[in-house]
Length: 148
Image (cartoon, rainbow, N blue to C red; front, side, top):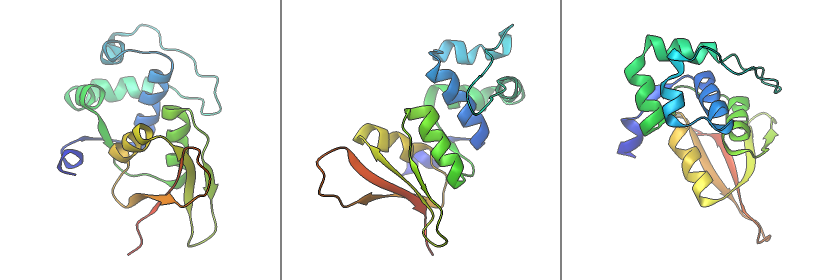
């Protein structure tokens, strides 16, 4: 857990922008050179990402941005829909939103590696709970707020 405490913090939106470029095949080298990119891709997805915002973050906070790209990051503050979006963009998996008051969560099937990756980026206040299932398919999880 100490490792997570030392990670650079990114906004949820910057994390989505970064993961979107990674999903487009951008290497760490290309991501690190985003401030010098003459042209950024146009996003036609439902998110309509504007990568100039990530470019601005990289210019304003070059060391933090470099660390986020090369060593990983933690999201400063997650929302339920933001978590679902991150899972779609970063992992390519559609999670299900549970919006019933008091039971809000994202339910999704994850491999061990995908679960570990999600755990590394989740902001404080969220946890991943296994869902007991008779099915032998991928493990099901609920990402939900920590109840106090």
